[in-house]
Picture 1 (cartoon, helix red, strand yellow):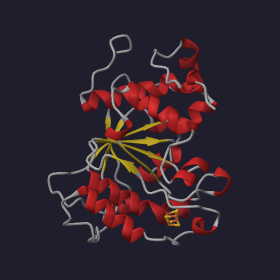
Picture 2: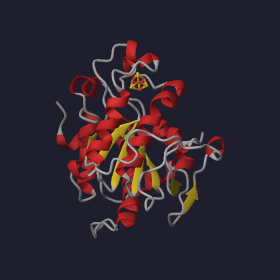
Picture 3: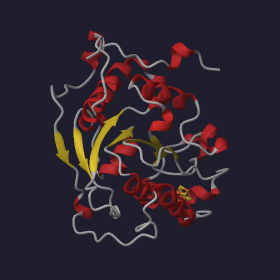
Picture 4: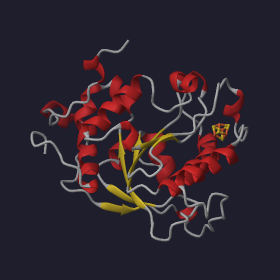
Length: 257
Ligand code: SF4
């Protein structure tokens, strides 16, 4: 049982003692191109969902292609089911986490445990509903003991996430935590270096079937599970979300803008 106060996102401005603990942030958001060197000359292979105009059907094609996936070792390390992703297939905003935990593995849906409750509160604080956004993870099977997914597992599974992003065509992707940020951006930087700016993002190895979608913005914030462990960072996460809200043209509550 989780008390409401425990998962509530603090929408108040960060306290001075928090600021002292954080690395300096840029006053205004900047956009940094995120083109991984290894992807620069990559030829995006045709994917079966390309040409499928309806994103619901296109996501179904990707899920069918994934099948009863055994592409990485996580298939034999106690997963109950594959956790594909959930939400609005035409979402303007997408959240990407690390991998399913026990609750997610049980229910087959990402972010349904305590961290999921906090993510729901974060989404609500932005003036949105969970069903407005799309939520997925870098790896779709639960790592045993909730360990961090290995790089190889992320590299094996993430092409399916990239294809999901190319189908959904969001305006903004929010990477929740270092694993998601490093996988999506192919950058090995610290959270302090990754946060506080936008990146130009194109899903690696795949092209959207829509020539009008030329990629999106990507922002990095803390994983809700980390915020549950260190609630003092909620103010910083709220700054990241406000940056995203401005980009999406969402109204920021006057008390916190
Ligand atoms: S984590 Fe991804 S690649 Fe690995 S078995 Fe599960 S679905 Fe397949």
